[in-house]
Length: 118
Image (tube, rainbow, N blue to C red; front, side, top):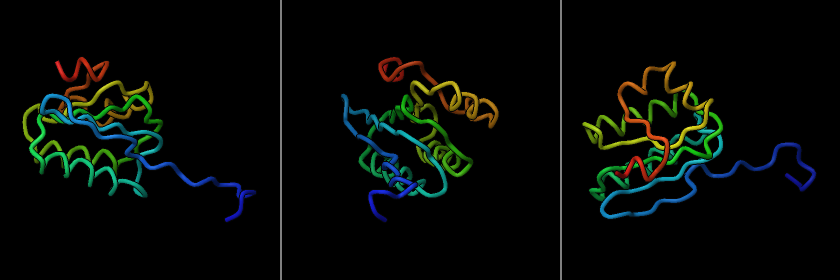
């Protein structure tokens, strides 16, 4: 693919992972779907395996997520139990996806990363 290519390379979905007082904050961005769900799954599994609690998923820059990405969040929640997985700052479209899927009833959704960590 040359520079004139119509479809630019997609950015990776996991933009950052940081530790904050035993918690993990995983920053996701762009479109979360079948094609990059494995990268998200890997980042969540690494944080779980390292014993981080809670794990906060910063969704402020997520533009779209499909059922595969929702499934990845459900898998992580089932591994952690309780409110070990928390979602932070989803945009309106992403928040709507969480509501329509019913996932917002099973995962705490916070307005900011700081609120999710509190």
